[in-house]
Image 1 (cartoon, rainbow, N blue to C red):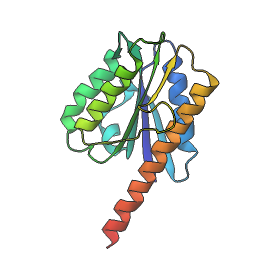
Image 2 (image 1 turned 120 degrees about the horizontal axis):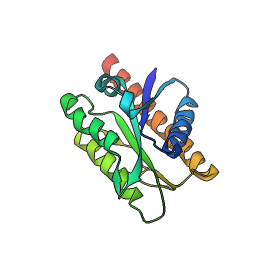
Image 3 (image 1 turned 180 degrees about the vertical axis):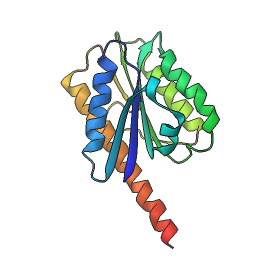
Length: 167
């Protein structure tokens, strides 16, 4: 069973709605176990146990929320143990041109420092899903797509690792 962790911070509820949609997409992939948690309830053991980690944050002044940054800062204690895991990010913001992409890229940078494999999307929302205000139906579809893509990649990598071990 491939384990996908979706962790998020949400003050208004918009990022939570996105997280639920990402989780729904991941759950749609056979052989996937999904753990959906608020970032304040997410432990370093949760990060280590996951095959894929998707992090959501609101955008505050072009940056991620303190609560998300705190988890990423604390993750230095498990540096090296997240290598090879699949990572992705999403954000909600208060308006257009408010730094949503910089928020997502900040999360992805931390994932890359950990040696994680970042899941992008060549079709839309290349770095991760960013929405303005309450997520629209299109935004929620894109969140579900993100969850499915992450789960599929994590399953593929897990299968490849298993095949290598069997040799």
